[in-house]
Structure formats: C-alpha cells, structure tokens
Length: 278
Image (cartoon, rainbow, N blue to C red; front, side, top):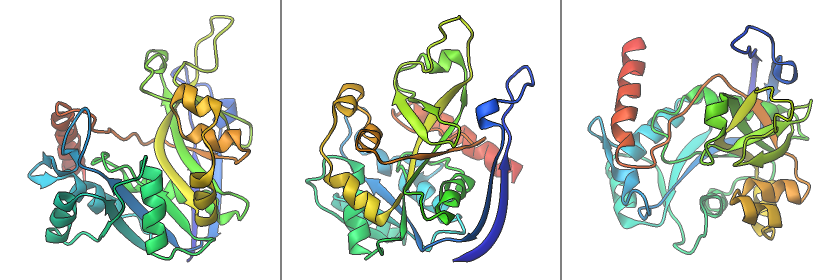
C-alpha cells in the first residue's frame, strides 16, 4: 500500500509542560505491507454472557466494532473470528465477514492467528487484533497502530495514553513505561514508575489494541508463558520476556470497553455525542 501521511502527537501535562519522553512522535509513512483487521469474539463471559450480541442503540455490539474498524483506510480487510454459531449467524445476517474458528483457543490472540492463517496473510503482512468489546473505537487509533510498520524492523505495536494517578491505582487499567525510542520496558497492574520522591506522574495507561507482523504473531503464540506473564496475568509480557520489542504509540484517543451490562448506557452516550459532533 502506497501513501503519505504525516502524524504528530504532542502531549502536555496539566501544568502545560511538555512530557519529555513523549514530546513528539512523527511518522512519515510511505509504504505499508498488506494490513488486516481481525476481531476475535466469543459468547461466553464470566461478567457479561453474550456480550458481542448485546444491543447498543439497536444494533449488536459486533456491528458497531466492525463498522468503526472498517473506516480505517489502511486495512485491506476486516473480519470477525468466532467459535459460536449465534455470533456467526448474526454476523452473516448483518453482512459482516466472519470466520468460524476452533473452540479450543485459550485466548483471543490464538483465535486471531487461526483467522489470519485462514486468510493466508503473508509473513510480512500486518494483523491488527481489534478488541470486540470496544464499540466506540476511533478508526484513527488503528491508523496510529499501523504507522510504525513502515519500518521493517518493527514487529509489534500497541497504544498508550496519559492517565491520572487515581486511574493508575486501578489494577484493571494496565500501565506501561517506555524507553526513549518508545519501546515498552514493562507493563504492570501496579502504578509504574514508582514515585519515590512523592512526585506524581506522568503515568501511561495501556490500550489493549495490538498490531503484529504475521511471522511474529505465529512465533508469539508458540512461546511458553513466562513467570512475569503468569504473575501479572498480562500476555504481552510474554513478548518482552522472550526479547521481542513492542513499539508503543502515544495517542490522544481513548476507547471505552464494555465489561459489564451497566457499561452499555455509557457507551450509548459516547456514540450519541460522537454522532452529533460529526
């Protein structure tokens, strides 16, 4: 895919001072390999059974996620991957491309790999693992994920945004710390870095969207779980434990994932405001 885009992201703290390690990110993208978006979905959930089919403004959640992902201009193809007949049939009725995958996968990443193999994604192709519970997803976030892949050395990407100390204390909101080149040093459920001198911030919250080169995705799924991954219950640590770098792209966008039924009302308000502002 040939195109030229200049992207600049500048972060400021509440006091107006520039964050030194996230001062400016600029990607001049000229060439990308073929890029695919895969949305792994399953019906079972301990907190919200049948979540992918939950109605949001009269449409199932999978329709919202697919429709917004399809607006990313760099993606050649966007498909759902599921192991459930109810999701599969609903997607077909809504004319959403869908693949039936094995019920034996232990995580969404394994399902994404199977779908990518069905699609015959080439080794240097790029796959976005798009969370199926992000119905207010901004398509621009997917473009930001893809930008670094114009560099052939980049194998994995993800997103992060600035959060407050109070947000950082939430173990459900994963934090990340970066090197000067924006490669991830560590992800944790604890607030990192620790403010030894009682100076708070900045903190970066991780957004659980990933881009993989196909060959790296295949390698990742085949790796053994490491001690850090099992302790934090964060599968991205498997990559770092095995020496695979993750390029982190700072973003000003924030998604809102649906974890529980009560989150539906919040997402509906977000979508209504987004529609009225368009």
